[in-house]
Image 1 (cartoon, rainbow, N blue to C red):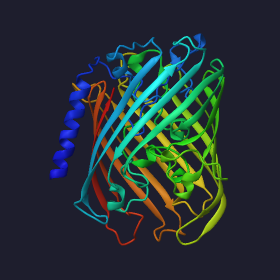
Image 2 (tube, rainbow, N blue to C red; image 1 turned 180 degrees about the vertical axis):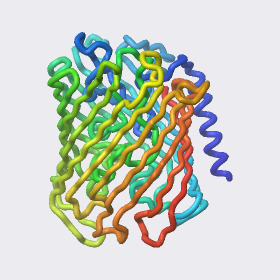
Image 3 (tube, rainbow, N blue to C red; image 1 turned 90 degrees about the vertical axis):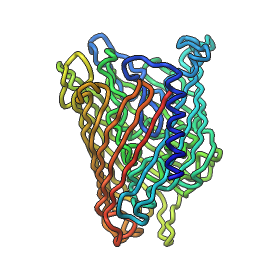
Image 4 (cartoon, helix red, strand yellow; image 1 turned 135 degrees about the horizontal axis):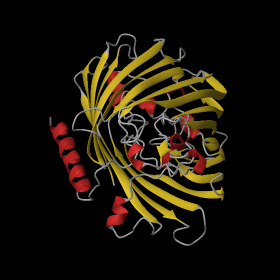
Length: 445
């Protein structure tokens, strides 16, 4: 009870702080309310595409809305952007798993500084970004015996950390066609990102994200877990993206691959010791006359170096493939607001003998603006299945279901409540089915 009270007051303080920043009437279209932070589309459109603003590959992953900087006197044209994100999360195991009736909380704070070199009149097409991370959490997923993770926040220990989460520079090489990013970054912003929405010039049609599920497979596919740098273990590397058309992209990245050795890449400098993570992805977006927009992406990856399990099973070099996409299925009020239905899907495969999961399939539905008098709220459901590595686990697979409701208090403050059901927790075949509750408050500024 004391721990619950602690997180209640932390959530209250976060709410009070963000209310003081002020807000508009509509949700920010440049905020991804996932635990990984926020993506800012910054999309452009060509005249022949009308209102469809196209390219899912043209993304600047800058955390927060910049409201904090504007309160400090840096307007949107100043070239200086200061923002951040606060997450207060509490999960409780209702039944099943290793520790039924046990709960735990997580607090995350991001602070970001971004410098636009063109607006600062230094040179054209450059962007610097630096992000500080403070994380305090508990290994909630271990309580449940969940391998996929019904809560997306816990990762490798230590679970109390301060780190430079991002420190990168992005440069347009060929304007609106080819750009590169180098430095410490979060790979999951740019690759295998099913959350990233397709954007429109009419802002009232835009959505913060394709889903607000809180389970881990939404933010990193299970077949990539353990090799792809992401929250909260970012990694040093280089990302290059080419935009051949206004609705397609090709991206390639190479990064410090020591996460695959169980090393905290987010808490150390780049290592050049033969362990590298390579990933390439291509994708495109579309929209018809009724603006039933959608997008799809395909990718492949390679992890170099010799990897070994706790039982001394080893493999030198591992590869994998993945696919993801989303599709608008229904508009409730076409041309008026974003209410309606979106569907998404994910899939992954790898040839690994050492990673925890080797096959993955998932998908879900998201409903926007369908609750009377709560036009900005959303709710949805998702399912995730993964085949477990037989070299590590006795169970063949793990299935997970989750449903959520997200309340939008203001354009900058969201409360997501989710319920998870795992009939066959993968850590131990003797575990009973898991029923779990998660409440996550997100405030962006």
